[in-house]
Image: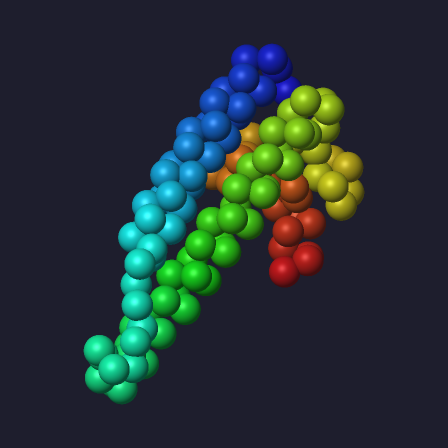
Length: 114
C-alpha cells in the first residue's frame, strides 16, 4: 500500500472517529438529567423510558466499540500492518478497506469466520 493510500485511510478513519465522538457526545448529553421517578411518571411511561434508555445505552456501547476499532486501525497504520489480514496475513482488498476502514480481515477470512 502506498503512503498516499495510507494517508487517505488515516483521514477516513479520523473523519469516522470525529463523527462517532460527536454522536456519542450528543447521545450522552441528551441522556443527562432524565429522571425515572415512579411518582412523576406512570408505570407504562416509565417502562417505555427504561426501554428507550436501554436502547440508547446499547447504541452507545456499539459506538464505543467502533471507536476502539478505529483506534486499533490507526495503531496498525503506525506499525505498518494496516491492510494485512490478521488471520491469514494476506492483503485486505482496497475496496473492502474503503467500505470498512477499520476491518482486520480479508473477505475470505471474514466469510469463513462469520
